[in-house]
Image: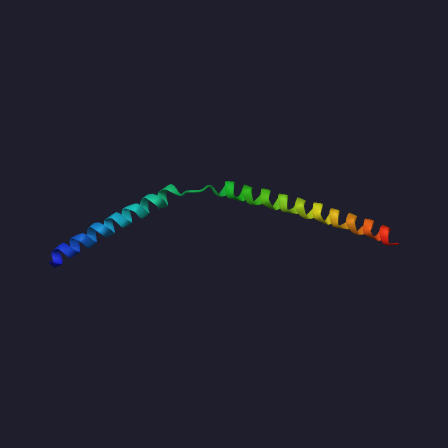
Amino acid sequence: MKNTISTVKNKISAKLFNGIDKTIDSKSTDVNILLNRVRLNQKSESRKKIYFSTAASTALILFGFLIF
Protein backbone atom coordinates (compact mmCIF):
# COMPACT_ATOMS: atom_id res chain seq x y z
CA MET A 1 0.00 0.00 0.00
CA LYS A 2 2.78 2.46 0.91
CA ASN A 3 4.64 1.65 -2.26
CA THR A 4 1.69 2.53 -4.51
CA ILE A 5 1.04 5.78 -2.63
CA SER A 6 4.65 6.85 -2.97
CA THR A 7 4.71 6.04 -6.69
CA VAL A 8 1.53 8.03 -7.24
CA LYS A 9 3.02 10.97 -5.34
CA ASN A 10 6.21 10.73 -7.38
CA LYS A 11 4.26 10.71 -10.64
CA ILE A 12 2.15 13.69 -9.62
CA SER A 13 5.14 15.68 -8.42
CA ALA A 14 7.05 14.85 -11.61
CA LYS A 15 4.17 16.13 -13.73
CA LEU A 16 3.92 19.31 -11.70
CA PHE A 17 7.63 20.07 -11.81
CA ASN A 18 7.86 19.34 -15.54
CA GLY A 19 5.05 21.81 -16.22
CA ILE A 20 6.70 24.49 -14.09
CA ASP A 21 10.05 24.14 -15.84
CA LYS A 22 8.45 24.61 -19.26
CA THR A 23 6.62 27.78 -18.26
CA ILE A 24 9.71 29.34 -16.69
CA ASP A 25 11.82 28.78 -19.78
CA SER A 26 9.23 30.20 -22.17
CA LYS A 27 8.78 33.48 -20.26
CA SER A 28 12.00 35.34 -21.01
CA THR A 29 11.94 39.10 -21.58
CA ASP A 30 14.43 41.59 -22.87
CA VAL A 31 15.29 44.31 -20.39
CA ASN A 32 15.98 46.90 -23.09
CA ILE A 33 12.47 46.51 -24.49
CA LEU A 34 10.99 47.05 -21.04
CA LEU A 35 13.17 50.12 -20.41
CA ASN A 36 12.21 51.63 -23.76
CA ARG A 37 8.55 51.06 -22.98
CA VAL A 38 8.95 52.83 -19.64
CA ARG A 39 10.69 55.79 -21.30
CA LEU A 40 7.94 56.09 -23.91
CA ASN A 41 5.27 55.96 -21.21
CA GLN A 42 7.05 58.70 -19.24
CA LYS A 43 7.27 60.91 -22.33
CA SER A 44 3.59 60.47 -23.14
CA GLU A 45 2.59 61.19 -19.52
CA SER A 46 4.67 64.36 -19.45
CA ARG A 47 3.08 65.51 -22.72
CA LYS A 48 -0.39 64.85 -21.29
CA LYS A 49 0.50 66.89 -18.20
CA ILE A 50 1.71 69.79 -20.32
CA TYR A 51 -1.43 69.71 -22.48
CA PHE A 52 -3.64 69.60 -19.41
CA SER A 53 -1.84 72.48 -17.68
CA THR A 54 -2.00 74.56 -20.87
CA ALA A 55 -5.71 73.90 -21.27
CA ALA A 56 -6.40 74.62 -17.60
CA SER A 57 -4.47 77.90 -17.64
CA THR A 58 -6.19 78.98 -20.86
CA ALA A 59 -9.57 78.20 -19.34
CA LEU A 60 -8.70 80.21 -16.21
CA ILE A 61 -7.58 83.21 -18.26
CA LEU A 62 -10.75 83.14 -20.39
CA PHE A 63 -12.89 82.76 -17.28
CA GLY A 64 -11.09 85.70 -15.70
CA PHE A 65 -11.72 87.91 -18.73
CA LEU A 66 -15.40 87.00 -18.78
CA ILE A 67 -15.90 87.88 -15.10
CA PHE A 68 -13.95 91.15 -15.08
